[in-house]
Length: 211
Image (cartoon, rainbow, N blue to C red; front, side):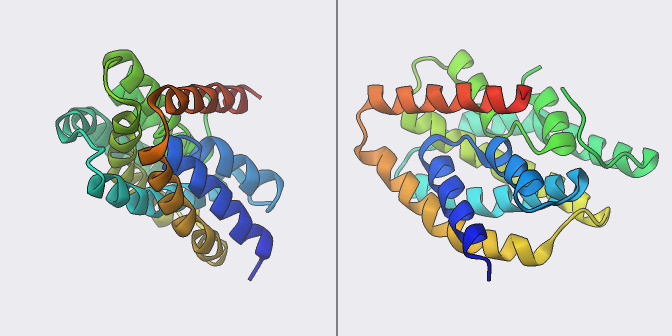
């Protein structure tokens, strides 16, 4: 067991639980730069990490009443079909590496190709479309939308062989308690503080994508 992997999983999990952002924009660079995975395997491993971690966080936010299920369904109606079509295209063309990259359809494509977007872009979309939605509900709704999206894309990458199972298991040992803690913190944080943390996370994710 790699203590660095457990610690990395915990840190990313806590940030995702608190903001809904950070799964792809933080974990993918770690998998590439720290753990030395190839781009394709890093993306596939991160998608499974994000899907399982966010499923736990989504359950915690659901119990706290932080999810707008109507908005989640609207987002998934566009993002899931585009995710499936992108995975089919990757099989047909043999493309299995990250591409550089509106709203729900584009989000499904971006998540499938790069593993970045389910949290960062999803949260941005929610902030723009529903500016009056409470910050903790933006976080919860973003996580609920990301779970099926990342898992479907992750299954597609697994069929392409783009997955490092042992490392994934070690990362999850840290991320599951981390995301639970982050989700609980959103309940006690003041609205303005949580919005500030969310916006800061989005700005940070943007710089990570551009760098």
